[in-house]
Image (cartoon, rainbow, N blue to C red; front, side, top):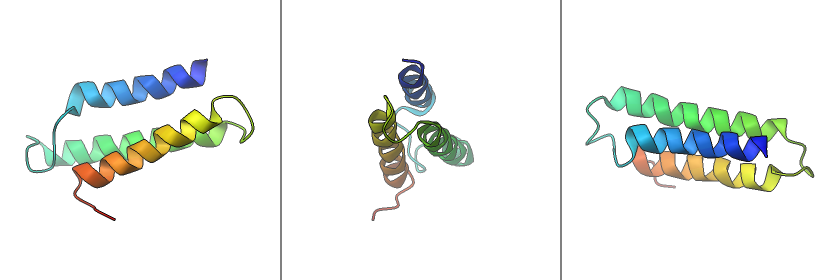
Amino acid sequence: MVEAERLARLVDDYRWRHSNQTLATAPRPEALRAALLDLMHETDSLRAELPPTGPGHDEAVLVSIYAVRLSDLVLDRTP
């Protein structure tokens, strides 16, 4: 499935570049913030492209939620 591959690539790319960084440990916090915002935007855009009852939609929703939670942790925005 193309959508699943795109979702996996988005998360893998983020992990490869910023795997264990936080704002306190990142050499360039603004780049980390931008990467998280990009990850959230891309996963949400992909989720929006899929029909709610179509294949891959549930997975896209989960990855989108994962991106939001990850950004909350990394950017120290606890709900």
